Image (cartoon, rainbow over all chains, first blue to last red; front, side, top):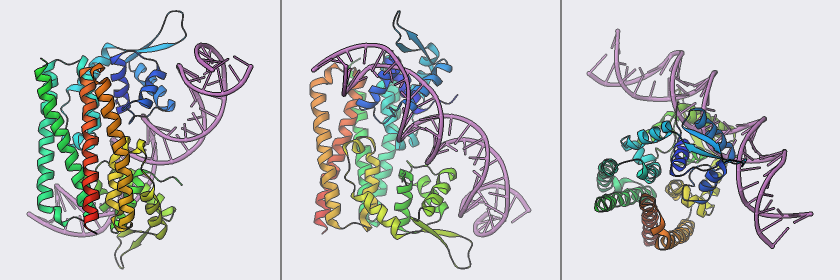
Length: 177
Length: 177
DNA sequence: CCAACCATGTAAGCTGTTACATGATTGA
DNA sequence: TCAATCATGTAACAGCTTACATGGTTGG
């Protein structure tokens, strides 16, 4: 089956700690993960989908009517597979936020070596992107309309800042281990 | 009628210069505007929607069978309305790319004063966001799990870089006029 | 002449949005 | 007790993805 971005975000949160559907909605509504939909018409069907595919299970607290979702072994290995997919240039250019989300979630499921591998892969691609953008800006920048050039520069600065982050994060994680 | 993000992207490109549907798809496929779908099942229905709502018109070159889309007056004023909407904090946090796209497109339709107003509004919100994130990071950063803290830091660095861009861009545009 | 690309389109299926509905629980 | 929030859900609708289909044009 196909796993959507929302599915991964839900899986990652449930893996972090079991939660109710409502609690998951609140996370999307109130935290920096707000890129994802918090609407009930998105969350509840997605949870049922995930449960049908055995990636999560709902369990009721004894006595209570309230259910919480727990991640299954299959769910954890799906997550792990996702973490270990090499980020592609396309993903880095279009969905960097999702890659950072991945990073945030992988702490509990990956070994330090795997995390370092992930960050190195990301670093390599960000270097390529920054180098490519730099070259373009230097040679063709003048030909662009003013706003086009400035908007392009925003992208360049943004990738450079992500590359900075990647490098300092690599060092920090190495230092911690 | 409701205008989607893809609609605005199409409108902005057509306003820049008239193009065929295929040419529009190629832009999304090959340039940094690649966040938007280039699939025919998205573009062609969107173009028909826009034409039905009189925001664009298709015209055939004399003799040729090929048609190009041109923006209408209504289309231009829709675009202008969109440009002049104050960016909200929510938009800045979730769809900054769209705001930068807006900036790229507004050169031809807005006066310098209006562009400066737009950038000042954006700057104000980015300052708020950076200040808020900074405060959170300083006080609650230690309580976060390692990867959570590092991912949060990525967001902070990213907004700071956008704020930098915003400030230098304000100066650059003032200098040009 | 054949492959690659130009150029446009349709149909099925899925996901998300919006809006509505329901009932339980909690705090003032 | 009344409002707010907790908590879960459904239904209509719109939009995008994927996959397929069609025919024209260009270059080797």
